[in-house]
Amino acid sequence: MKIIVIIILVLIGQLQYRLWFGDGSISQIETYQTHLNELKIQVDEKKHRNDRLYAEVLDLRKGQEAIEERARDELGMIKNGETFIQVIE
Image 1 (cartoon, one colour):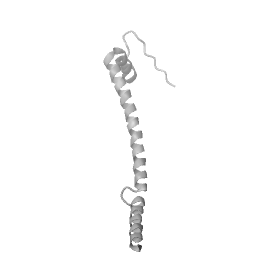
Image 2 (tube, rainbow, N blue to C red):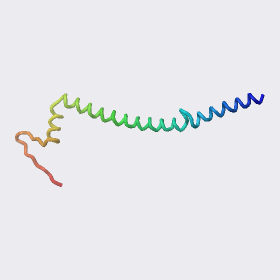
Image 3 (cartoon, helix red, strand yellow):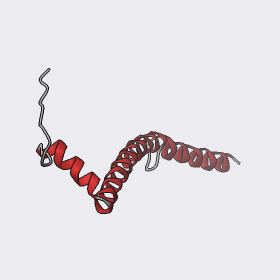
Image 4 (cartoon, rainbow, N blue to C red):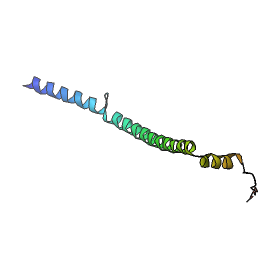
């Protein structure tokens, strides 16, 4: 009977060791979960950025207004007959 109790205690000890210190332990799972949460945040940020870029591409493909706005903002272009006024603050 003592041998069975000793075998059971050894098995319980081995399982406890794997739970706390072995491969797939609680601390390792928490580390992986933290890393996974960080990656999910990065993925969400990149999806949001991609959605904005896709919307801009669609806008540029559809009409001349987006192209004109971009040329005015980034390149400082003006139409014929317009007067350019620069405000310095």
